[in-house]
Length: 247
Image 1: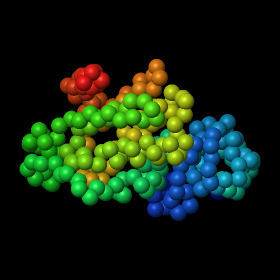
Image 2: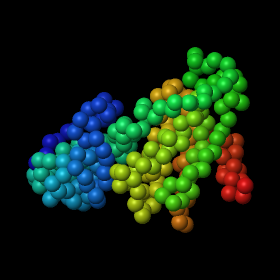
Image 3: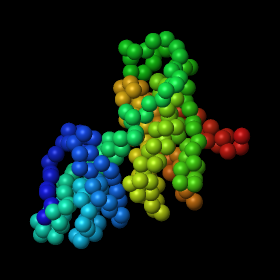
Image 4: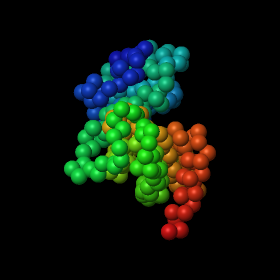
């Protein structure tokens, strides 16, 4: 029976320095890979690991049936099980911190800084907001259109790198499936990655993030911050989205 870890504070435990010593990547439960972090949302998914010889760190919900199954010792010693109050949040936290090619390692040699008066004493700019206009950027993700919109008070010269590294990380982790929930998860992961990256540049500088993706006969819209609470921001975003394909 593998090691059991429970009642652990997510923000303290799931940091890149600790996890990456043994589990440097993520993978899906359907395609487990050695030395990876994965998650099982229910008992039937966890049972898929009974005869797996890979070394895995598995996040599971802290519920009675999974606790009972764990005590039956049907999992090998190569499986480390972590009981979580919120499995999805724990996995997203790990995903955002494990991929070492993302975040603090994104360095641009010729980054263009945002102009205007000094705003180092505030999280967001109080004056000259004309230097922090809303942007909408179109990408191709997995062969389909992806729109990312951002309201942010720091330079966005590295936005493309942040987005593409997240796309690559999802592919490496086998997180993209022919499944509606997979599309929703991707939007949430990308939104979290963007917020976390620019928060490291300047805490609190991100005011709004929108991730919009279309896959065949399915459109997913993930809004955060000002795009959720201000009608004017939402109207501006979707009017731009309607215009872009016709330019």
